[in-house]
Image (cartoon, rainbow, N blue to C red; front, side, top):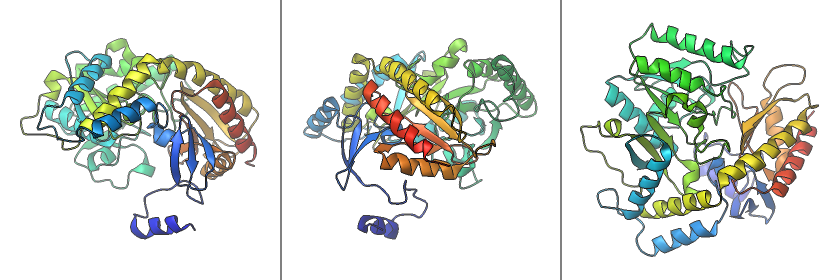
Length: 427
């Protein structure tokens, strides 16, 4: 046990998870690479849980942060804040939500917490629909709607939550159906559920489930859900904490794969927009955002230094078409991994979109999740110089691959080769 690991265990909670048998201390990074305390270099395919979205130490972002820090770092939302207004204007325009208002928070958890507050207040109901296998954060309310037992430490909640089918395409009672029939079955299930309860305030859903193992329904499911929900006055909250900002390649927002019935009523974001700085937020129609009848501010949400980082990062992302890069390089990486794993019995499925790819592992010859194999591959990939993540539903058996969106083709090929070797080492 390293000296730092011993100190960590002495003062931090037991439930604060660390990757690897010998936990890693990352000291610095550049581009798509990071270095540990021993000076070893790694290709980073997880980006601090999809948060270092653009690149490590991106000069445009570090310059903006440094210059802002030299002026003022923080003042709270009680004062006018030019960088916050400027970033809100850009996000409102990009969101696709008409007459949009933006509220900044410090995390995705807080963003989802705020969206739940707005939706339940607006609708006068504490009943919420969520997806099975979902994850929405670690606050009391967001844990209460999380449909993933591995990340839900309590059944207590201020909300009444009911879980809907559809977030996982290849498992569950409708997995055997074709896409159109899958959507139809999920819609009928939703209709049946709504026939037995009072109209819920909202459905909250990740277009691609992050912690759940990068699973998603067929395109159009949430559009079909929305048609049903609107009949009951129920709002749609799109949790874009992991899918936003072009990561999926095909779309800027994950909800756009389900946009046939229009944009969501509320959209939550975080992670990548700050490229490592703590930014989250909610976008909502003005009538929903303005429904609160008591004072509400944010001490740290929208602080000047994080807004400067967000503006610089968003500008870089748009000017360099990183959504297009995610589509091109991510598509190539996905094909490469599918070809490399086609004959590996430990791999059940390689799925994803853009630079958001999941590799689901099972015990060979079965359909049973294999979390031990996932842990072994994580270790072997690290030995090969590659950092990846893991997740999954009932068991943590999905490798999560989400590099910075500036990933190059040679880096994608290098990472795929390391991962292929790591997977081949698991028996």
